[in-house]
Length: 509
Image (cartoon, rainbow, N blue to C red):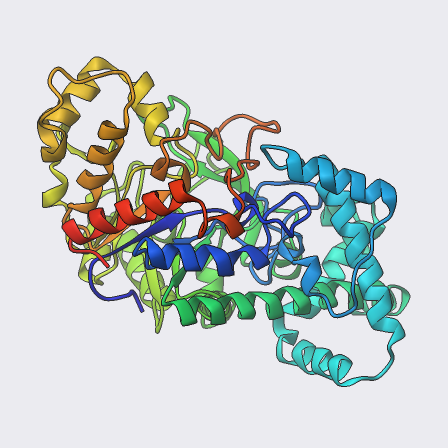
C-alpha cells in the first residue's frame, strides 16, 4: 500500500548510482550507503526506473524483453559467492569506466557479461550443493514466467538477436516438438539465463531488506507495454498483438501524434482468460516493490492503435463508457493489495482522472506543467492524494528548465508559487537561494508524496534522457559522488541537514 503521511524522496535510476565497488555502472550494492544518507536527509522513498530485462547492449530501461524478472546488468559482482577475477585488459576497461562522468556502456556491457558467464561456469562446476538446490527450488517457484523467458533469451542469442518472428517457423509458432528440441539443444544456456534471474532476485531481496531496515519505501516503474521482440509477445501473441502499433493521437505537442511501434494489449482476449497474465504481472510487480509507478496510465483505459483498419489511428475501445469501465476494472486489478501511482501526464480525459480519484490512486503533479486554463496552480492547492515532482526522467532538470524557459514562465512561477514571491524581478540566473525556494515550493505543496530527481537536489544540468533522440547522452547519467562518501563529505552532510530542515518545514518526514 502507499505509505501514510507526508513524505519525500528521490528519483534515482540504478545505473546512475556510483560506488567504489562497481564496474562503471550503478548496481544493487550501492543502495545500502544511499539509504543511510537518505535517513540523514529525512527521505523516506526512492523511485527507480524499470528494472526489467532489456535488449542486450541497449541501455534504455524501457527496451524491455519481459514483463517479469530483473536486468542482470545491475547484479553486483562482488556479492557472487563464486568470486570474479578480471584480466588485465578487463581491469583497465573497468578503471576507465569508473573514472568516466557518465556510464560507458561500450566498456561495461562486455566486461560484466564475461564476468557473469565465468561465475556461472564456476557455479556449474560445484555440482550438487545446498546453493544449487536452492537455485532449483527457486526455478520451480518461478516456472510460470521463467521457462518461457529463459528459452526466449537463449534462442534470441542463438539467432543473432534477430526478432522471434524471424526465427524458423516452428520456433516462432512455438510448436511443442520444436520447443522440446530447443530445450535439449540449449539446456546449458537456458540454465544460465535462469541463473542470472535467480542471482538478480536474491540481490534485489537483499536491497529490499536493507530498505526496510532503514525505513525506506522502494518505488518501481512499470512500463505499460512490452517490446514486440520480447518473451511475452512470443509466448502470448493473442494478448500482446502485433497487427497494429501502439502510440498516442495528435495533440498540441505533435501534429501527427506518436507511433511507438509497440504491440497493443487485447484486453478482450485477456478477459476471456480471466486476466490471468495481467494478474500474474501485477502480482509479480507487487512482490518486487513496495509501491510502483504505472506508466502511461491512460493506456489501461484506451489505446491508440494504428493498423490496416485505421492507418492514422483509432481508439480501442472506441467509446467513453467502455473506456471508463475498462480503466476502472484494470486499475482495481493493478492496485489489489499494492500501492501504485498512476502516471497521468499528457493529454488525459477528465473521466480517466475522475476514475483514478474515485479509487484513491495518486496521479502526478509536475510543477512546471500543472496548470488550469493556462495558469499555474498554487502547489498548496494540489490534490492531497497526488505525487508532486520537479521533473521526470524525460525532462530537462529543474535548473535546465529555469535557465532556458521564457520570461513569462519565470514571472508566472514567481507570481503563483508563494515561496518564489520574493524574487522580483524573476531572475534568469541560477542561485542557491533560487534552488532552495523551488524545492521548498514542492515540499510545501498539499501533495502527500514529494519526489525530486537526484540532479534537482544539487541544481545540476545533466539530464537522464532526451526523448526523440538516440546516443550516449541518454540513460548514462551518473551521480557525482560515490555513495560511500555521502556520509563523510561535509558538503553532502550540509545538504542532508538542509533537506531535513525543508522537510520539517513542509511537515514531511
